[in-house]
Picture 1 (cartoon, rainbow, N blue to C red):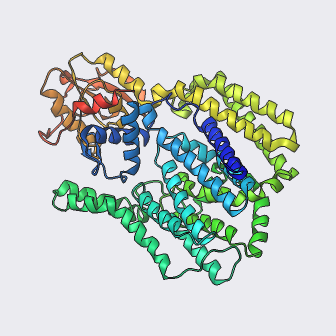
Picture 2: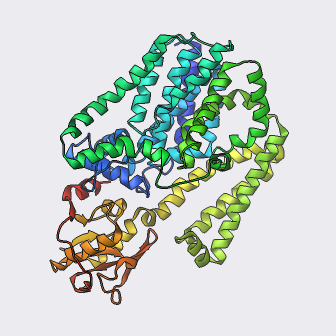
Picture 3: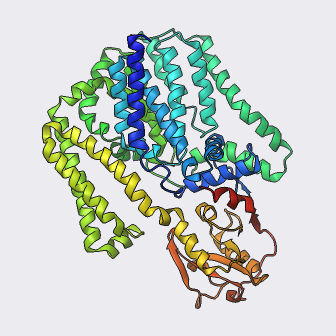
Length: 567
C-alpha cells in the first residue's frame, strides 16, 4: 500500500472511531420511543414474521405512510440479531458512518485530505447529525442515500468524466425515493452545475449534453425494481391494496407536500430552527458568509454547487406548508463540505472562539439551572414537562459543572474547543445515563407492566386509542379496532368486544370511558403518552352506549408479540 493510500486508510479508521464514540454510546440500552421508532420496528417485525416484504403491515393493517427500504433494513438487523433494541438503531448508525466517509472522500477529492477531515469533523460535531444518527428514524438513512446520490453527481460534474458514478448516483436516488419520497433531491444539484458550465466557471468536469438524461433512466430503472411488482400486486388486489397504492404514491408524496395534515409552519420556519440544529458550525455564519461570497466571486464551481444545492433544498421544503427541522438533515453534509476548507481560518478568529466560549457557558448555566429547578420544585417541573424528571438532577448537574469548568479552563481563546468537548460529554451522558433512566416510561414498557398487574393470567386484551409501543411490550395477543378509527368509535367497539366474554379486558384512556363504560369505579393504571390509562372489564360496561357494532374488530396475531418479545 502506498503512503497516500495508508494515509487515507488511517483517516477512515480515525473517522470510524470518532463516529462510534459519538453515536455509539447508548445503542442497545433502550427500547424504541414514539412517535416513529416503535411504528417502524413493529412493521419490520411483521415483515420478518410473515415474509410479506412488498406491502408493509402494522398490527394487521396495511401501512401506507412510508416506502419499505428502511423497514427492510430494520427487518434484516432484527433477523441477524434477534434484538429490537439493536434493530431499530443500527441502520441509523451504519448510515451515519457511510455519510461521514462520503463527506470525507468528497472533501478529499475536491480539495485535500485535510479538508476532507475537517468537513467530516464539522458534520460529526453537528447537533442534528448526531441526534438523528442515534435515533431509529428514517432520516439518517435518507441522508446517507442522498449524500451518495450527490457524490455521484459531483464526481462526474466537477471531477469527471465519471459516468459510472453519475449513473450510480441517480440509481441511489431511486433507492432514496423508495426510502422516503424526497430521495430525488440530489438531482437539484444539476441546476447550479449546468448554470456554472454555461457561465464558464472554473473547476468543472465535462459539459452537459444529451447523455446526462441517462441519469433519469437510471433513477427510474432502480425505482421500477420495487414499483413494478407493487403495481402488479395492487392492480387486482382489491380495494385495500388499491387504497394502499394510491395513498403511498400520491397521498404521502404530492398531496402531503401540497396539503399536509400536520406540522404546518410559516415559510421562514427553517431560518429560525436551523441555527440551533446545525450548531456549532452555524455559529460561524457571520464569518462564513463573507468567505463564501469571495470564493463565489472567484467563480469557484465547488462552492456554487454545494451551497446552491443547500439553498435549493431549503427552498423546496420551505414552499411546502408542512415543515420539520429534520427534513433538512440531508443538506447538512453539503453544508459541512462548504465549511471544511475554511476551518483553519475560522479557528484563528478570536471572535468565533468567544462565541464558542459564550455558548459553552450558556449550556453549562442552563444545565445547572435545570438541575436546580428540578431539585427545588420537582413536581412543578414535571407538570410543565409532562413527565417525571427527578432523575435528571444528577446528570444535568454534572454536565453543567463540566461545561462551566471546561469553559473557564479553555478561556475565550479556546472557546470552541471547550464547546466541542462539552457536546461530546453531553452525548455520552445522554446515551449512557439519561436515555436508560427514561426508557421504561417513554417506551411504553412501564405502562404495559402496570397493565399486566391488573390482568388475569388468561385474560384477552384489547387497547383503545392504541400506540405501537404498547403492542411491542404486550405479553399476549392484542385486539384493537383500527389505527385510524375515531377514538369514540374505538371505545364503542371496545365495549361490544369486552361484553361478550367474561375474561376479556380493555386498556383505555380514562377520558374515553364515558358513555360506554362506568368511570366511577375505574382505577387508574398509569399516566403515559399524555393519557391516564385504566383497565376495564365486562362489568364496567355501562349499557348506555348506543349502536354497539358487531363487526370491524381487528386482531393482532400471536406471532407479532412473539417476534418482538425477543431482545
